[in-house]
Length: 160
Image (cartoon, rainbow, N blue to C red):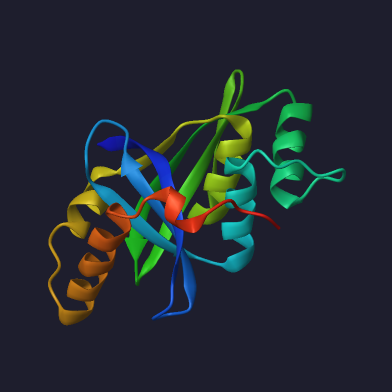
């Protein structure tokens, strides 16, 4: 089963020197932190802030190509976690065809935001976050709790 999520926020994890996008259940309280690259974090942050550029950035280009092909992104599904790597699919429809495109979650989220497409997470991934098993997982759980309690105002206004 998949659960709809929203981008709850972006943060920087100084322990691993990486950005984190936090996805929160649309109809619940569970969250899923996903560590992402700086460029993808910037692409997500810019879209959330409504910033536009004179020339299209990569995720803008992908959205424009899909639209130009008379197709649309109907949803993104973050479907799996293997070897500490999340896997996602962009679901693109061009009737009567439906195409599932393998993509990184960070890129999928950036494209979904531009295409106004919903984001879903496999329920197993949200459940996994609530049952840490190792000391490393305990640290991840502590970070998740910290991120849940962050107020977006703590970061101030984003400016490039």
